[in-house]
Length: 280
Image (cartoon, rainbow, N blue to C red; front, side):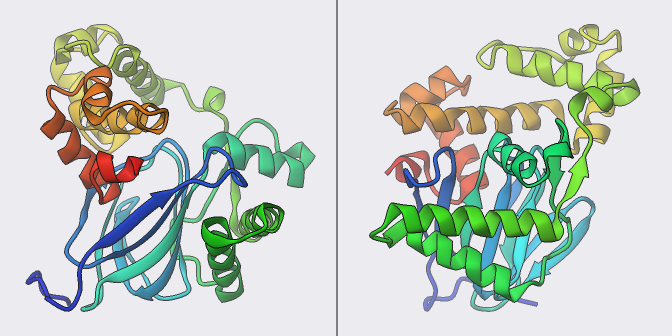
């Protein structure tokens, strides 16, 4: 079990980038030793290829360890963590494809797929040829001279991931009943105006529950309390603003954070870098 003491031989390095060959997809290349990711979630998918060391992460009630040339995949809106599981930390290349892109790719592969989202396994995927294909595509998106080659490699690798390992997830319309319907309505209320102060009483009234029952139901079904879920959504919604040139302070204000330091703290927990470094 690795110790928590920092080692002078290893430092955290991370770089986010985008490629016109794969629109709507954030890309990350990183090595982490000291950083650990607090529970957080993303609106799109996470497809991580571990290239060195080992990453440990909690996802869907279990702890997983991903070693070199395995895949750690997270589905949209699902809470997870991340930390080193080897003395040297871990290095990886990560795709953050939008949910709509992966659903569209699934429909092209299988026209009868329907309107749901493909669901990637919660277990570590041990498929070395696929891991190497994804890593090669990621490297081509970062440094390759031919955008057509990079796009072809990326789409082929993601298609292979779906055909070999994905399952079908029911669409939202099929899962809105009962507790799930209450939580969906509370999510909509939390997301309606991210800068609006909101109390648990107001959130409960939106679904006909007391503040106590609303908070308990939300935490049970969503995996985190309403305020933590809302802060994670604020971080996710800041990405297009930063991408379009907004300053860190402007993005923080627009997304409802009380100040820039509050925004930066939550952003770093989710992405491992400050919003200024993420924007580049």
